[in-house]
Length: 188
Image (cartoon, helix red, strand yellow):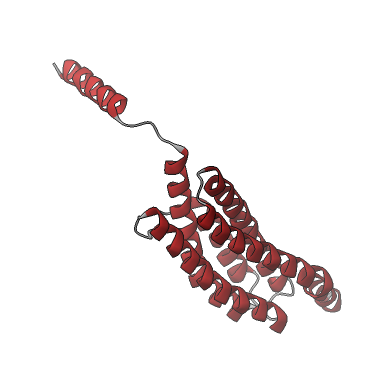
């Protein structure tokens, strides 16, 4: 009897799925928009901790500058949600949770260590690369969906994310990584 009931449930589930509208690019766009909205809001909570943990004043300043930019990114995302007629809501993003967890682990494991700033910088760049990927995809989909105003907003954020990544790379190669290596040699 239980077996027969399970078959009916399975048939009902299959029939329900068949009646649901197929998922479209616009659905994927909205789901990804919710993903990056969650990510940006999480980054807003994490950046002050990273700035406080950084030994380098330049690195702390870069984190604080990006915090202000990220607040602007959220405002742009709010505008895109409004264009869609949808509430601005995030959905949990395991990717950004994993990346930020790694950053928190670095802050804990390398606290007061010569390599802390290099680790913080690497964690920040992992976040930037994730965001660059998401914003590039969203911008392209917005263009394909005929949402030129949304595409312009997403491109503006993409430009800022790429500039931040460039700044972090310059900071890493010109100062942070070299200082970490010098501190290591001095301690050895």
